[in-house]
Length: 185
Image (cartoon, one colour):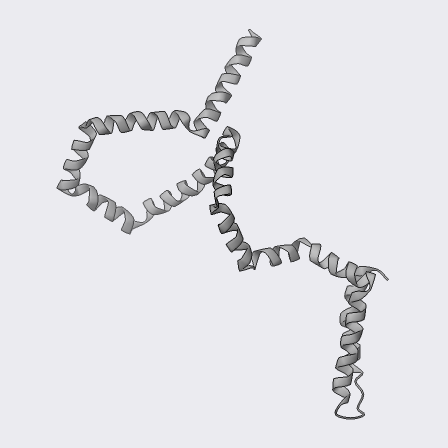
């Protein structure tokens, strides 16, 4: 008998067994339960029963339910991502420009969406306008823009931009394209 048939046969067997209960005595219900339980256990122990369970457990829908519904999985992922080994892994992974570019692109879209939502939020906008209108903030901004620290910050930002995985990938792409065009001439 095939495994899929076993999966269908099990509920039907249970239904028929429960419908065909004997009316001998009040203990008949317990006897039927024990017999049904024994039959189900026997069916599950067969090769077909095991195959049916494997088929159910390997289905994509079942895997998703089992994995996504378990708090243990979420806790394990969190612990794994914050361990010393994970930190070393992420440092090594982000040293690869292609990987870093991919992650940065994915995060860029989420951050962009978040900022757009905030900019459309009237409460957030009002708060930002109030902050920038304060004379103390305006004076601090002017002083900051004129300071050596700000100029150093600009230099750091430019350096950081030049070291950015997205920027590096774009520069690599442009250099390869320029090299190909030079080779064609």
